[in-house]
Structures are given as C-alpha cells and as structure tokens.
Image 1: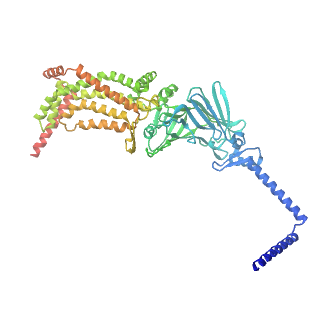
Image 2 (image 1 turned 120 degrees about the horizontal axis):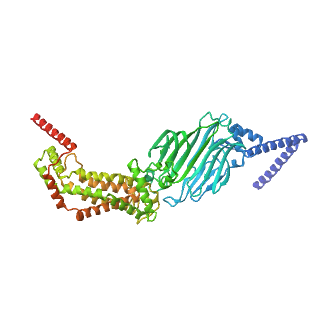
Length: 629
C-alpha cells in the first residue's frame, strides 16, 4: 500500500514541474522586435558562410608544397594566389591545375607526363621484364624527380610544385607533348617532348618565352634530376656492381662515380649523363653543355640477403645559363637498354657509358668481340653463340698456345739436368739459379718463353671478362639448365646464406672450376714435382687457389661468363692433348736441345747484366760469410 502511494506522488510532482516550466517559457518568449533581430543575424551568418564556402571552392591549398590552386576567376582567390606565386598564379587558375597526366608512346617505350611539375612520372620499357616477369619501369611510383628551381619576383619557386598545361600534337608519325608553365597566355616555361617510332631516345627541349622581368636570370637557375634505380635482376650484388653514374664533360672526357657507398663530384661543361641500372639506362643529353653539374650517387644496398627495391640513388644538379634573359636548351632523353649496338648508333660517344674496359681491352671488345658475338647471336641461340665464339678465339690463339706448350715441354726435358744442378750446389741458392739460367739459355728453354705467350692471351681474357656482364643479348636467354645467361644458374637452393658464395649452387662455375683444375694440373705438374726455389710462387697453392676462386666468386656471376670459361678450358685441354700426342716429338726436342748446348751461345746484354749481378751477389755473400768467420 505504501509503494502505491509513492508512485502517485511522483506522478503528481512531475506534472507540477512541467506546468511550472511551461509558465516560465510563456513569460520569457521573445518579442516581435527580438525575433526580427534574430532573423537578420541568421541571414548574415548564412551569407558569411556562403562566401567562405565560395572561397574554399575557388582556392585549394596543398600544405605539403605550400602551393595554391585557383579553380575560378574569383578576385579574392586570385589575390591570395598572387601573394604566394606572383605571376605564376595564372597557371594555378587553368584547368590543368586540377591534376592529370598525358601519355606519349611508340612501339618500344611508353612515357607518362604529369601536369604537376611537367616531368615524366612513368617510363615503361615495352617488351621487357625483370627477374620476376614484371614489366620494366625505369620510372614509377615517385622514384624520379625533375625540378627547375628559379627566382621570380622575390620568390624562390620550384617547378615540381606548379602545374603545366599539356598540349598533345603530331609531327608526322611523332607524338609531340608540350607542357607549359604559364604566367599569361603568351609567356611561359615550356618542356617539349617528341618521341619517334622505334626509338628509346626522345627530344626534350626546355625554353622560356616572354618571361623577362618575371624570371630573375641574375640569380642561379638549376635543373635538378633525381632518380632511384630499381632492382631488375636476380642477384642484387651482381646487378649493383654494374649500376653506376657515368658522364661526359669538357668535350670528350669521361668519368664515373664510385659504385659503392656515397660519392659526389662537381664537373664543368657536362654534355651527357647516364644513370645506369646495369642492363638499362636513363640518360640526359644536351647540345649545349651545362656549365656546371653537381653529381651524387648513393649505394642503397646494405645487405645482399635482404630483398631490396632500389640499388642506387642518383642526382644531377645542373646549372642553366640564360642568354638574353631567356632559357633555351635542346636536349635528349634516353630510357632503354644499356646495349652497345643501340648506343653506338646514336653517336655522341654514348658507347663510353658502358664498362667495356680501358685501353686495349676496350678496343678488343668494341672492334672484335662485340661485332663477332652480335653476328653469331643473329642466327644462333645465345648459348651456342658463346661456344662458337670461344672456339673461334681458341683457334686464333692456338699458335700462341703452341709456343707456350713447346716451352713447357723443353722445361720438362731439362728436368733431370736441373735436378743434378740442385744436388751439386745444394745449399747455395744463388749458384743454383746461375747454373739453371745458364743451362736454360744454352738449351733455348727459358721459362719466360712459356710465360710470354700466356701473357699475350690476357688482354683477350680480360676483354671477355668485361664483355659478358654487359652483354644485353644474353638477357633472358636460356641454355641447358640456365634460365637466364645474364644471371647465375641455379641447380640447388641452399636453406642458408654463405658469405661470398650465396644461397644457391650454380653448376656452370663448378664445371669451369673442374676444367681449370685439370688444365693447371697438366701445365704445373712438372713444376710441382721440382724443388721449390726461394722467391718463386708455390705452384701447388696456385693450382688449388684458382679453381676455388672460380667456384666461389663466379657463383653469383652471369652463367654466360662461366659457360665461356668452362668451354675455353675444355678446348685448351683438348688442344694441349693434341699438341702433345700428335704434333710434338719430345725426342726430337731433346736432340735439338743437345745440339744447342754444343753450339757457342752468345748472351744478350740483358742476360750478361743479369749474370754479372748474380755473380756480384754471390761474391758479396761469400765475403759476408768470411767476415763472420
């Protein structure tokens, strides 16, 4: 009964409170004058909000670049844009300031150019793919930047932050893209791109029109080109070794930055530069040399076991030189293969952008190996072309190798007599060397006659060593178990990583190592049997070191190079066996040596000088021994 009474009282209380509130609202309701004032205030606030919304629609502000984009002819918006950009506020009022890109392409190259900055934001090399089978993009996802920094009306501006107006036309079969950064309808900074069918090289012109008094040419104007090179090959370390910034300066001089760590260089009168990514290149060339360029290169590969996206970061800050208050540069850009034949066709010493070796090594590559391999690979599979190339080179060097083996055979025949000399003068190393040289001179069997032919082959071997890592024709070509002759072959994946060796087993380096071991066993066998002379290299150590070096070092090198060394050593062994068993007659050589020993042998000036020096050294040694006694 008490609970029911409480409920009724509560209801009565709520009713009374509601009545009181209604009475108070009635007593405090606004007058007609107050209502009219409220309506006026609301209308004012609505008008101010509409004006603010209108301004926001007319102006957008990019905090990252502090740039203003004007999308209407609103006078307030234009005034605000002019405070930020000066005369270049005009470019922010054009439709192109809303963003967008334009594509120009041919059958081998596709380029995407952005309104913002007016530079290439995508460069696709058609009909090519990386080690994962993905398309080759030299530029994509912001890895490159082309920016012109200049002063205008007491402001420092960057072209990358401003919007260019695109205009796509045709010049015959060539697509032409004009990107203009305007200050009025007839005054602008223009980037002009023209691409020809079937070419990786395009025209790139930079010029100004009607910018006198707007662009301050009394202050430095710099064109800054930055690029991070994408990884495209299976082996990061191998690719990064041949990824390098090269350039031409002061006429026809050439130089390069270090492939490792960080490097920078300030050069004068630069006519072209190449941001090389091993088998692909991004190049900028100019008809009129840049008076000054600051180059930078940074190695981005810190650990070869980590899956790395970029290999190098390149930079080139070019000083532009105005003439008559205006800029005008006729340039070219190249986005394509680092292929000697392609670069050579363009002239301008672009073949120097490839590491083909210095001096005689580069000459052998340019005028013999590259043309010959290009001819062979034109009608033969790449692997067969390597084998045929090796056979041709071996045939050409066979006379040299014949002389080398004859010298080795003579040394083998003289071994018993050399052993007698060692026994007779045991403990007197100087006398042993004197008598040994005398016998070799009489017999015409100097070790130098065996070394010199071998030295004559070194330029060819080194030229081939520099040729195969840059042979674009090998890229993506398979042979036997090798999927790509420009990269290492894999017959077994290791579950761990071995320093200097890698995480895989390559078969071609193993075969090449075995062939080298057999070859060195054949050529050094007699030397190892002989007593080791002081000061002479340990032949047994060399016999094991060279194959081991091949096995470890070449495990991450191009399988095409290992195939060459394997084939070369197999052919060398075969030639030596043929010479030994079918050409040379050791009995005749021995008889001829004995005849030579009977004839008086006239020493050359060099030999006489060496004999005198050795005799003096021997006499000095005896004097020292007597002095001790």
